[in-house]
Image (cartoon, rainbow, N blue to C red; front, side, top):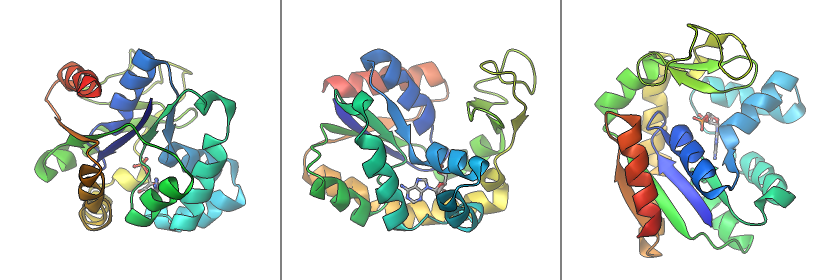
Length: 210
Ligand code: AMP
């Protein structure tokens, strides 16, 4: 199955991508994670993306489209994949179409802006492996330490409150039009984000069956 997860930053796309990845045994591909890894390794692409990312802006389409093309060509994508954080603009969605990729379903996780800001202030990520946690909703076994690799948990620079507002504005302006784009194709499914992650996950899995 070829899936896209849509939703505002902080709506819980990454967590739901993991849920689907485990349920269907297909890779979850996060352009944000790929860019952060490139940044950590100091590659040319990472350096190009840094200023956009830090400012809460989108990285230029040609850069992320290149990343996705390369990633989807890998063997593990042969039986399907979940895209988490791509596409984020209409030209990116058109690029997927131009690549001949037929998406089966687009799951849109809806969370009101007021809740997003509060959620994002509690988000923490592992400095080493990028695993994601939350001070309230998804706590690590040991405070400040990654369960997977024992790395230090930190707040993402772009999760700072002032940057979150910019990211939400970018989402409404550039990414939200994708809802109509995919609704017209008849493949959009809406999931209302719940207080409890398990409840959202149940709705996500149900949406895959519709
Ligand atoms: P994320 O981890 O998905 O919230 O992405 C973090 C940041 O990476 C975004 O705020 C953008 O700067 C950049 N980014 C990730 N995916 C994309 C994309 N599809 N298009 C443009 N920029 C992206």
